[in-house]
Length: 291
Image (cartoon, rainbow, N blue to C red; front, side, top):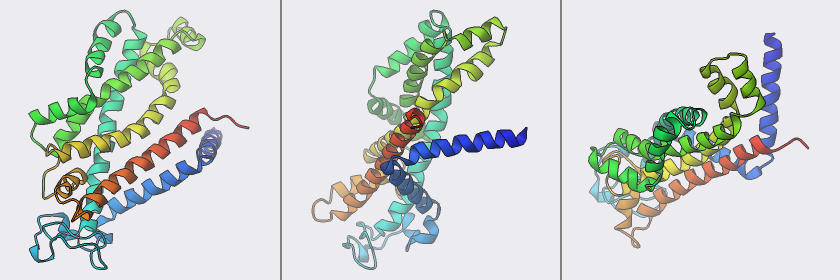
């Protein structure tokens, strides 16, 4: 029995990877994203000046252009830009992981309940509350929440989470509306299965494909919103490295000291681009059919 389960799991993983790998750009995106993750994990080992990621000042070497000693130059305080950018990947990736870990379960559960109990508790309370949040631009809502809270990484997670959960609630709600009248759901109800079983064993598995696809795309949006909060001073505070803060500091020095803003901005582009490419591959993985 265990051997059959393992074989089934192995075949499904192999089939999914085959569909994903047919999109070469998605494979490139996945490779790039893995390299960025490894760089963030191994930051103390691969950066030439790990101490520059903290409270470090050396005005003598401040604002130096990129050279052999400082591959991406230094900022006005003499801190190595390459070292700080690699360390800044950590909070950026952590934000994406934690925000999705919060909003996906909340939005999915609310969407399941609202869609299954449509016309009662679902429509009258959950979806009306969802519509209120969806009526506000996510970035504006995140900025509003962040302005009330103390500017920290944790509070930035809360602010971005408040802006993102309604999108998953609406997505799952729309899918449940179309799924709950399928024969297998009706059969489960006639057999006396519990509501929990029907929601999480019959309906939810058929909603996973668009949820996973949206997660990969939203990861990039979370990073952009986090950088936006840091750019206006509502995210992680100096001297801790933050991509958005570095772009904001460098923007004041353009065009003379271009490297201070360009390199962290380019890092954000690489992160978001890799996630968008992965998202395309995940979509193909769930929708492609065997030839």
